[in-house]
Image (cartoon, rainbow over all chains, first blue to last red):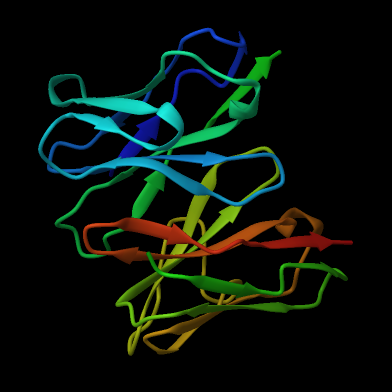
Length: 115
Length: 113
């Protein structure tokens, strides 16, 4: 069965610091990969997604993620964080080709950016 | 992307009662998904709702506790039955769209007292 691991549960950064959040998945076949963000008190929003093609994916608000197939990873990056990036970030994987097309989430990383 | 309307947005319920959550999508979709987000935790898939067939439940979730209806391609309901405080969570519906990915409703925040 597919699973998703996010190693950083809680990250605290100062404004302008660089961010990298780890995401690894376990599934041997083809996958679609996603990062979602949940701001305090709000619902999930899609940050970026990877389906195929260029493994470096750019999303909204200056975020990007790199798919490294050999490492089963899809790490999220941002060169300079802002206080408004304080939120919880979820990596999610869909192992396509299966019967249910379901999306499995990692445990989430809570990011706190200090002004 | 699809627009999903989910209601109620929140509710406070007595233990032992049931609550039905509705999810309406603005276009036809084959699969709809129901998730639970317990306080401070990630999203856990409860079941996949297919139109015209029984829902497919994930390990740890059963139809008697979480019955699902899917009467057409734009609507689904999830019922949380015989509630206990442990059922206090946010419940979300989601749909998958080709080449876009997954869209989520705004969620139903359930508190069981």
